[in-house]
Length: 394
Image (tube, rainbow, N blue to C red; front, side, top):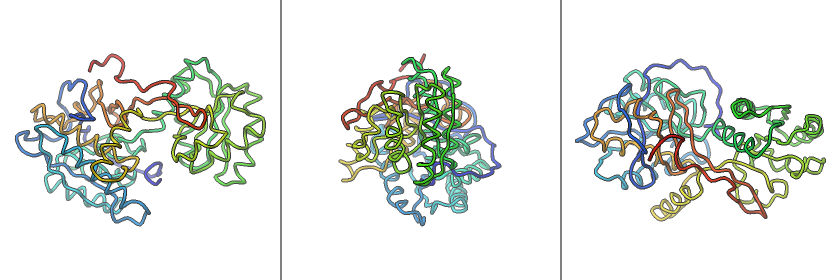
């Protein structure tokens, strides 16, 4: 998807960010903490103007459906707020940076005190630049950490989150030596870097790294090199960046056939292996490990959305719910500084539609993920998602 890893230059970094999180229903703050710092003040006795920037009108297939899901989720969150009024104003970005900058500027002129969205990295960066001129913070639906910082926070689950969670778990299970297998595109390179950083933090060793061209022949050509690296390095973990829509099915078919079985080395995936559900049927993914949001909380949100709108939400639709619910919870404190950077980055974090999360001063996020495996073509949670961050009371 386009929102994941666009590469571009940027010139932003102005206001030191803004809002936070929490509310009734599915999102609740553990500890509001001090509320001060970068961001506009609000009048808590009046509806809070919130701008929602969605990719409606783009040429990208599915963007209108995504836009509607984000708007629906935001309105569902508004309906769940207790004692807080949100004046939601929806703006279409058409999925491009120029339009995103223009509508972000318009939103601020219309009185928005915080912006939710956009989805795609370039558009979010452009919106951030425009909003920074007026000291308004942006909670983007992107998972691209290269745009994070200043007045822009990313809400999407990142490679860094998954890599950190998986390497820490692997280390606790006695694993120590890994080979990283990655595509040679931007996503693969970013994923590889996240894994390498997480390995250092977790005390694991990256003994080898093999990349492949994103084609069937490219994957086939890489199999001997991957196999040799795993054997020569005596690896007990093989960490794959591949997606289920990309090279994962072919890799997990060919590698066991080449003698690198899941009984010999632990397969780990940086992306989810349970979507689409047909992936669970593949023999090569059985017993592999991957990270995912808290399935209980995610399932609850999906059920509520389905009941309200008669269809399932988009996979990232819950981010809009989280943002709105967070704003409502903070505003309910009655503090005019409820949408400041200090509030947004309080260390206790928040309970979201997919589990706990917190936003960091550098604009990135940390999410509490579960570790899952696939056994007998079914997802099995082998290490539940944490319910709070270390040292944070709820």
